Image (cartoon, rainbow, N blue to C red):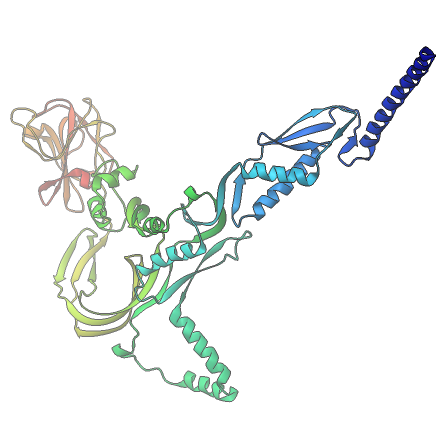
Amino acid sequence: MNFIIMKILSRHYKKMKIAYIKVAALACVAAAFFLPNMQTLESDGDNLFTVYLNGMQVGVLGDIEEADECLIAARKTLAASSDEMVLAESDLSWEGREVLWGAVDDRDVIVSNMLTALRGSVKETLNRSYTVKINEYTVNLASTQEVLALLQASIRKYDSGNHYYADLVMDSSRELNVLTTQIYSAKEQKEEEEEAEEVMTSAGIHAVLDDIFEDIEPASEKEFSDYELGLLALDFGDTVEVVESYLLDYELTPLSQAIEEVTKDQEKEQIYEVVAGDTLSQIAEKNEIPLDELIAMNETIEDENSTIRVGDELIVTVPEPELSVERTEQMYYEEDYEADIVYVDNDDWYTNQTQTLQEPSAGHRKVVADVSYRNNEEVSREILKEEITYAAVPKIVERGTKIPPTYIKPISGGRLSSQFGRRKAPTRRASTYHKGVDWATPVGTAVMASCAGTVSRAGWGSGYGYVVYINHADGRQTRYGHLSKVLVKQGQTVSQGQKIALSGNTGVSTGPHIHFEILINGTQVNPFDYLN
């Protein structure tokens, strides 16, 4: 009996166990379909992703594209938490696997976890700042107030009375948002406001009549006391561009340093045009540059003896700040002055011939003038009123109008072997003061007339050996010494470049060469001062 009962119970227990397993399995399937964090996933490769941001696990997703969307949302939240631009690492990665169903995290949870990861990797905060560009120079400042302070510092060097102010305005010529500068006068602005107010309060007919009478009122000459002396106009001499930017702390320049850099004089290259009467040494002195530096800056100049001509352009350096200021000042002054030179032309003379007919003497005058400057350098001067205390006496100079003849090197090639001037005597009986220049050249080299003229002597000349003298129309004379053969005769007329002899080694000579002299009024001068 007991055996039968136990057998019946055992059979029912097995059926109950199987039923329990089926119910549990059914419950799991139901959970997969109906619970919110469980999803049925398609079996076509990795379909469940564990997402990491900067190495930190931030959640599980069934679609990896949602990770990018969550990251964008997290970055927006981070950016909104600061007025400045925030720079943070955002290294997004994931691990995928293929499952039939799985639990995924809520989107808000993932965004929150990503925000935590971003905040833990903030590198720097980018400051809203302003980049100022002046020609090739740039500087980064923290605010528009600092930009204006920099501009005002440039102005204040020349406007101690605070009459002018700098402002920033949009550059209408640019497509992008670029600011530029505008300088306004506090006085002019006040006058414009008063004028506008006066127009508003004046009766129409009275205003018209005032304009008419003002136009027909005869102009009278101003007295010195009528002029408003002082600063008339001021503006920047360089274009200033200002753009908004986001920069790191270390990229910003302190305002005091920026002011020093912008207002301090720097050596800047400029072009100098050679004028009549200029020499290299005068140009160097005028621009306060050592002569050797002037030569080094200009490839066309070999040494201090190089020839320069009117109109040549040379590179020079001048002290200028990064931001130049142009201004006009109205000034009263008294001065001694020189009258302009009066020239009397003589068509029978060459242009290098002059004679002073009357010596000058200075006069004295009172002056009001508008003087324009670029930084501290005067650019122009316009005299508005002048009162002569006593007149200056002009210098009167008679001058020639004919173009003088030119002089060329008497041989082609050759090596310069002895300069003009003091030297150590190269051989016995030779002079220690060389009165010409020598070019070493083989015997028989063609010697040409340096300038057109008349042969005054041709033959043996003692220490010169065989020699040729030529007189020229401007009163000068040339000599050619140590020749091997003379090809012209006394009294013969020769043209410039005509072959007159062959070089040699005759007379007091240390080797084959040509000795060449130019004489003015019977005295030898340095030929290099006259050769073209």
